[in-house]
Image 1 (spheres, rainbow, N blue to C red):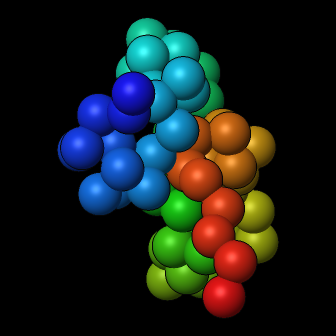
Image 2 (cartoon, helix red, strand yellow):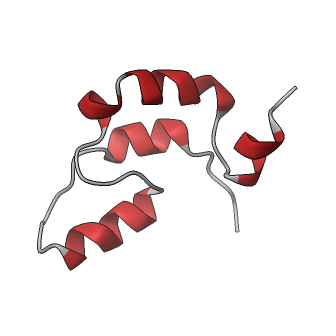
Length: 64
């Protein structure tokens, strides 16, 4: 059974604890979906941003 908070945030409950436990290793500047990390990287004039793979593992993908 999934936690209502993880469902509302579209977070994979299995990935949550490892992501928090190793936060500094997985994320450097920001945490969010891949799309939001890409937007953030553009706003701080970076061509890349640490955390894309971790974001893909943490956030569930939805089909539109």
